[in-house]
Image (cartoon, rainbow, N blue to C red; front, side, top):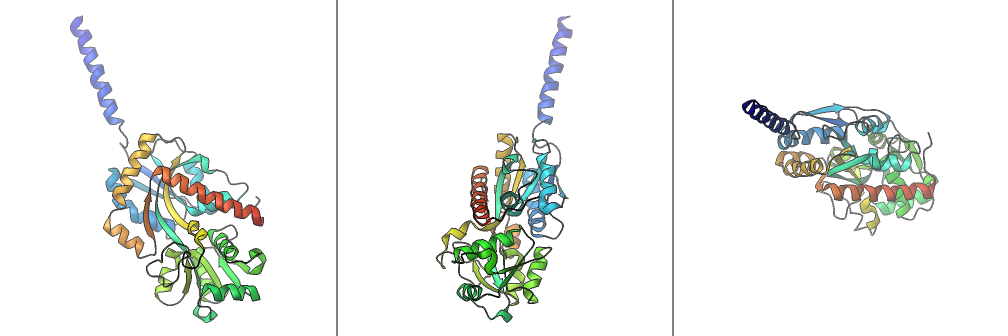
Length: 325
């Protein structure tokens, strides 16, 4: 009887130990949701970091494009997932700063997510075509004051629209919604094309979206919203132009989870991202697109995103830009 009891106790002990080892996170592939379609800025960023990040995680990363509703469809898929670290989101400025500030009926809020990192910053750059004859922000603002100037965007409620309005406001345009004509397009690529073909005068967009056009001389950069100049863009920074409040106006890519992700899992992601973002090939490829690799901890990321959202929300409220429905 004693031997049988001892054997049973040993088996239970071994079983619990084995179960504990098997349950150590992560013990299976991690689903990484990209809330936009293939080939866009978020998709490129996600797939570029996926190799070094997968090595750091030690498990396969299953990359899933769940596009629709301006990134909301993929975001909701993660919002509704279990917060166990096996379903994560490549969050973007559009999904988690612009849309919550602009849209009245978005099916999620910032409080539904926990950000484990922001790792890529995309300065906003304002560009125009050589055919416009505009070579500086001073000239652009003067022409806006004279009337007849237009700007393109990826659509009503997009980062492009918000950026153009915020920049015009900072440069002294009192009523930016009527001072320049907004010509929305169906995508960021189409917004850049509108500048190239003369449909619109200027565009304020992520640096990565127009880096190749600037390098090729097809677009002229007028300013970048960062404190320092950006490599590859021969344009003054917001600090140089005396507009430091625009430093917060940047695109970004980060990784988020449902809001109930445990602290220890968030800490693991922070460590993994520290390893992945040091990968030389990853940095080279992203920096060639005009991105700045800047890793934020979970605490820094959450504070940064909340601060940016508050700034955008204030502007939207002041100008009556809220989108209903």
